[in-house]
Every structure is written in structure tokens, then in C-alpha cells.
Length: 407
Image (cartoon, rainbow, N blue to C red; front, side, top):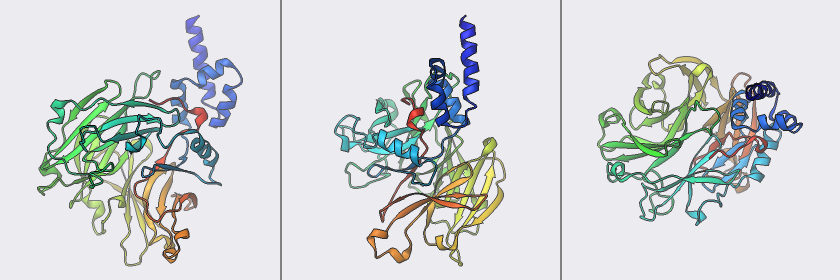
């Protein structure tokens, strides 16, 4: 009987994976208890989401923090509005005082925040991983003393006023694959600091609940300067790998979180002849069949146009191949401020307000567009009324009806 019940659930799952949309799944699961039991299981939901990837729902700004949902007529607008109403993006459910917490990263519906520890250290902070939709969180244990001893006078990575915004570390989330499809999707937290002459890195895994040390490349492979040449925080990500530009070089520092290993990648061939002044001029995107697409933004051209070059590679030893290049609309030349993400062939691009509106504070907007690489079509995704916007995340969460607690 037990085998028959298991087979029945498997067959129901096969049927439910073929419904065309999350809304149809919600309606189907409401029809009977058996369908609801299958449709609400973590194992099924992970499989359904992998087959029916949800488009981005909005843009999240850590400074605030504030979530701007996708605007009509974007198809994501209804779900984005529902998420905005249901979730607590003020993170008031974290241990008080609420204003002490600083948003550091977002991935897979989870958020990573930290705050200055009672000791006053801006490097060894208190760290929380949370789900704002279900208002759940976990506090990570402190980094053990034997590991912390390797960190000596780390440089500030953000802030500088020695206040609540100052940090001498860079921490971020990484997803971890999981063979046990019935348990929660595990995650890792990466902690990094730049000290004089060395890079120090640790990682915490939600499965073992322990901190471990990472072995970064030697200092001379990173930079010939005495001061560490990596500006943390300006990172790209694709297929489980994180990438940082190394200051005054044409190389990347790479962290492969599948192996938890660092390496150095020479990207000089794709940058020759182009002026690279900002780290967000180069972006990594996930492509099919495990390939990584690298988008190089050529901004400082004599014709004042912005041209995007698309390269792909499967492994670091591959020669990068130029797939195609796109010249963006002429009126975007002075407004283009980078790519914040991609989804199914669409880039999400940040544009500043037109120069003719500089004297009008009402019109000093920052607009995010989606841009279809194949059809060259574009549309407004969301917009904020602010002259200055720093870090922003493309929010790729799920509709509330499909979400389960993620931590």
C-alpha cells in the first residue's frame, strides 16, 4: 500500500508539472486534498519552479530598504503587487533594534543582513538570513576565534564614518545543490575581508552550521600592489561562480561555490581597445547548457553610443567567443548605467533620467527597462523618483501562493 501511495503521488506530480502557469497550479491544488498535498510539498515546488521559472517581480534597494514592484502592463505586475503587500521588507521581525540591521545580499527569496556586534567590530558582525514573506530568520553563529585570528586590520569595504553603515567585510549568499529533494534547499554564506597583503575568506553552510576557511590565491596573483587589489562588493554571478574585477588589471578573481575554490581568470582579450572605468561595464549572465555569457558594455565611444558585446564560454579554459553585438538606442548613450540582471533572453537595464530634466527634481527618475536581445523590443519594468541610487537587486522571488518558508 505504501508503494502504491508513493506511486500515486509521483503520478500526480507528473500531471501537475504540466500545468501551464502558477495560477493554474493554485486552482488545481484547491480541487482536492491529494493534489494540494503534492502541490505544496517542498520537493514538488522546487521541481515546478525549475520548469516554470517565475519572471522578476521588481527591484529591491538595500538603502532604505525598499522594494519597487514591476509596473503594469508588465505580466509580473499583479504578483509583484501581491508580494509587496504580503512581505515585510522593513525586516521589523528581526531582533531589535530594527535600524541596526543592514541588508547585504538577496538570493533565492532569502535576504542576508548584518549589524555591528556588541564588541563594535565592523568586520565580525552579527549575521541573519531571513525570509521577509514568512517573517522567519536564523542567526548565524560567530566565526570561531581560531579562524578570526587570521584577519588583521581589514580595510573598509563600505561606509567609512565608523557608524552603522561601515563594514570591513563583504558577505553574500550562495545557493548549494541538494541531493535530498525532500529537505529545504541549503545555502551558504561567504565572508571575505581584504587585509594588507592578503585576502581572507570563510564560508558557512546551512547543513553543517559550521564556518570553514577558504584558501584564496596568493597575493601576487591578485595584484602587484602592496594594498590588496580587489574591490569587494562589485561582483558578478553565473552558474555558481562569483567574479570580481582586480584593480588595475584585466583579470578576474573567481570563486566557484560548487567546489569552494578560488582562481584567477585573464579577461584581457575581450577588453582590448575599450575604456573600462566602471566595474558594472562587464556583466555575467547564465546561458543554456551550463554556458556563461559575458556582456561587455562599451560606453566611452566617439559616437557617444553604447554597444554591448556578448561572449560565451563553458569553462575557464575556453576561448571566449563573440556571439553578437548590439548597439543600444541613441538616446540611451548618456543614460545607460549598467545591467542588473537577465531573464530568458531579456536584459534588465538601468537608465538615469534625461539630461534635459536635471533642473527638475520631479523628473529626476531612475528607470529600469527590460530589453529583449533577439527582438530588440523594450519596455518599462519599474521606476523610482530619486536622483541617486546605489546598489540594486533584481528581485526574482515567487508569487506568495507558491512560496514556502525558505529558512
